[in-house]
Structures are given as C-alpha cells and as structure tokens.
Length: 347
Ligand SMILES: [Zn+2]
Ligand SMILES: [Zn+2]
Image (cartoon, rainbow, N blue to C red; front, side, top):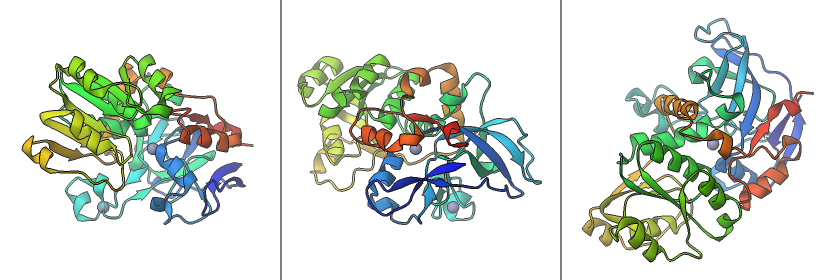
C-alpha cells in the first residue's frame, strides 16, 4: 500500500511512498480510510508555508476523512469492527489549563493529524477512540469526509457568532471554509451573501450560487451599492472573514453595521488599519479557531439534514495518483473541496 507524503521542505515536494499497515495501540481503532478531502491547510503544506516548518519528513498528510473500523485495541469500548467513523484531527493534550477548562481547541500542546503525525492519504490509520465520532446512517461515506471542515464552520457560526433568524450576514471568501460557514449561517436563519475576488469567478462564486447564495465579486461589483441595496444602507449584522488575506479585516470593517460583529476565521497574517472606527462603532471582533467535540456532532447533523449540501459541495474530479493536479487547481481557485477516493492507494 502507498501513502501520499510530504517528502521535502519545498513547494510541492509530495510523493507516493510505500507504507505498512499500522498496529493499533490498546486505546486505538484501526481505520480503513475510504474518502479524504483536500483542505486549505493541506495546500499550505504543499506550498510549505512557515506554519508547517515543524513537520518531520516524510509525513503522510490528510486530516479530513471518513473510514471504517477494521480492528480495535483491547481497551477500546465505544467502537466495533464495521463502524463508520470520522476523526477529530486537532486534539488537545487533556492536561493543560485550556484542556482542563474545556477549551481543547486552544490547547497549549495540541497535535494535528497529517501534520504532527501521519494522516489519512493512505489506506489505514490508527486513531485513539476518544478522537472518533460515529457517522449517522443517513450520511454517505463520501459526504462524511467533509465533517471536519464543516465543524470549523459550526464552531464559528453556532458557538462564536450572533447569527440568528433574520440576521444579515456577509461571508468574505468563497473557499471551503467560507462556503461551509455560509451554509451553517443560513441553517441558523441568517440571510447570507458571499463575496469573492477575481479568480473566484471561475469556480467558487458559481458554486456559491449553485448552493443558493447571493454573491458579490469585489473585482467587478460596486460593494457600496450592494450594501445599500441588500442591507438598506445599514451594513451587515455579522461579517465572517474567511479570506486568509490581509484585506479581509479592513473590508469587513467597511461592510459591518455599527454595533455589528466581525468573526475572524481565516488566518490573514499581518494587516495595518485604523482601529478607532471599530471602537466608535462598538464592533465586536470575535475569533474562531479549530473545533471541539460538539462542533463535530453539529456538523454531522447538518450534513445529515442536508442543511450543509455535501452533494453539491464536493468535487470528486481528482485522484491521489495525480495529487499535484488537485493541489495546483485548488491553489488557483479552480476547485473548492476536492474529495479523494483513497481506495486507489490500497494495492
Ligand atoms: Zn481541514
Ligand atoms: Zn491541552
């Protein structure tokens, strides 16, 4: 069997390498991986951004996946062979102050599957049972591969935002996290508009429209006129910045209404802007990072109900046998959520 690993400290630098089936420890289940998604952070590993310099090479990447339990360690009590599962790949240590008070998403020593240890772009992975969630019968196995990114959105919207029925929402950035955030915000009753830039016009903004959202292309559309029309000139109650671009926060400040809320999800690096207008408008600046157990459970339910439309959202055109094509297309904005069939790596 083979796995797709980051093998060198450079842009690209990924190869299919020979792998052995891991042995589960007593508290672990061995998972046969069926489907795995490509995420913005996987693209960050591909580009070898500074956040991933801590990685040892080779490391098999991939952290958004669905699979089936094929073997359990002696101490496993909650899962049986045959159970369909997803993994919570960002995990707290259980010992630090944040873990003790229930804030495991901001654990001081957290580890991430597919970054700090081998991930799911390979046929088998051994996972502690505490990190697994059962997949409900109504959720297809391919759709379950997008539970992890959906959990980032359920956390941002349900736990960290003020979105309620009737709330006027702008989601900046039609990437995977943006379009999931938009769907979760709509499920909460929000009236959601999605904005993107020039390169999003090819694939991501049309996808947003297919998902039923009003869209704005900031390269072409007059944002002031759109705000005037869509919010009666008041501004959006809640703006989510999922752009990961330094312009995301300043433009959120332009779009949010006085007394409104900006939720930062994308990691934008450095940006310089005047902060006094935020104070004078009493803008609530809220961050949202990673996800916890409850966010996974909410994500599974919203995929099960169809509030998050996995069928429309998933792009299954790509193969792990030619992963560079998927990564290059993703980086160029020509896809949003590629999901790979991992079974091609079994022989
Ligand atoms: Zn992810
Ligand atoms: Zn911890």
